[in-house]
Amino acid sequence: MKSLRAVLVIFIIVYSKLSPSRSVVSRAPPPAAPAPRSTVSVEQPASASTHELQQRLHELRAARAQYGAVSVPRVELSDGARMPVLALGTANLPPELVTAVVSAAIELGYRAVDTAPVYGNEREVGRALRDKIADGTVTRSELFIISKLWSTSHRRDLVEPACRRSLEALGLDYVDLYLIHNPMSFKEGPNPIPKIANVLQYSEHDYLEAWFGIEGLVKKGLVRSAGLSNFNSVQVERVVEKGRIKPVINQVECHPYLSQLRLEEFCAARRVRLSCFGVLGSKGTPGDYTSGLAPAIDDPLVTVLAAGLGVTPAQLLISYQLRLGRTVVVKSSRASHLSQAAAATVAAPLDSATVAALSALNRNKRIFTFKGMGDTHKNYPFRIPF
Image 1 (cartoon, rainbow, N blue to C red):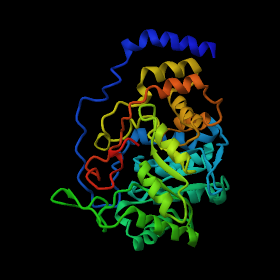
Image 2 (cartoon, one colour):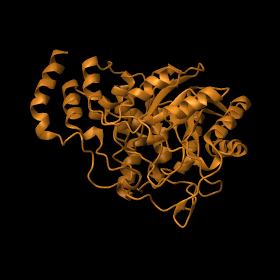
Image 3 (cartoon, helix red, strand yellow):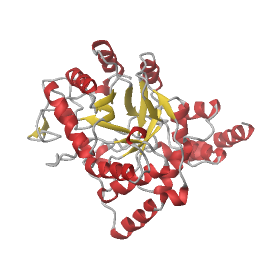
Image 4 (cartoon, helix red, strand yellow):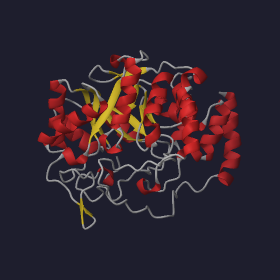
C-alpha cells in the first residue's frame, strides 16, 4: 500500500507532462460507417501475413506447455447459473486463427467463449469447441458459451430460427447465455446492415418482441440463461418489468474512460450483472468501427499503476473490472496475452486506492457508438446518460 502511494505521488508530478487533456478525447471526427457486406458478418478482421500466421499458430499450439493453465473463477448469476469471470471474445479475430485461438484459450483455462453470428466465425469457434471436448480437455458442461441475436431477427417468429442457425454453426444443442446484441431493430432479411441508397432500413418490430422470443428459447432448452447487450437503464427496466424471465447480464463497453458506475448500480438493484467488453481500449479494432477515443491501456496513469504493482497494463484493467464485481470479455490472437489475462483472474484484488484512481479517469466517452449502424434509431441507447 505504501509503495502504491509512493507511485501515485510520483505520478501526480509527471502526469501533467505525459497526459493529454482529459476533457478532450479525439479531435478527429468519427469515421463514416463501412458499406454493408453481402456476407453474414459485419466484422472485417484483418488477415495475418503468412510468416506471422505461422508464428502465431506455433505459439497457440504450444500454449498449454509454455504457459500452463489457470482455473478461472466463476460468479453466480441471478438465475443460479455459474458464469466464468473471464470470457474469450471472438470478434475481429483473423479468420485463419479463430479455431487455434479458441483451442489455445480452452487449454489455458478459459471456459467461457463469447461469439455472435455477425462475427462470421461461429463455425470455426464450434470446430475448436468440439475438438477440445473430443480430446478430453474439457466437457460440454464445463463450458459457458455465449451467443447473440442480431438486429435483423427481432421479430418474434425469427428469434428461434436465428438461434438454431447459431447452434448448428457451433455444433451445440444449447448455448449457456443468449443476448440481444443491441436494442436497435433492423429490417428483416439476409443483409445484416440493410440499406437502400446508403440509408439504413429499420424494422417496425421491437427488442421487447425479441425478448419474448428468447423466453421461448429458454423454455425449450435451447438457451440456459438470457441477457442483453448495449442496453441503457430505461431499456433494461422495460425488459425487467415486461419480461416473465429476467435478464441476468447486460454486456456493455467498460473501461476507465467509461466507468459505467451509474449503470452498474442501476442494474445491480435489478439483479442484472454487468459484463464488460472493450476493457483494454480495443486497439486492434478497425478504425471504421470506433469513435477514435484513445485506448485506456495507453493512459499514463494505467502505465504507472501497472508498473508499481508489477503487472501489465492489460492485467491491471482486467483486475479493475473484476474488482468491481463484473465479468470480462477479452480478445487476443497471442497465447502470451491470453495467458496473462487468465492470470489476472486469480491475482490479488486491487486495493480501494487503485480502484479509485482508475475510476477518476472516467470521461463518459465511448469507443463504440454505432455510428451509421443504428444511431438514428428510436431505440439508440446512448442518448441518455446511462
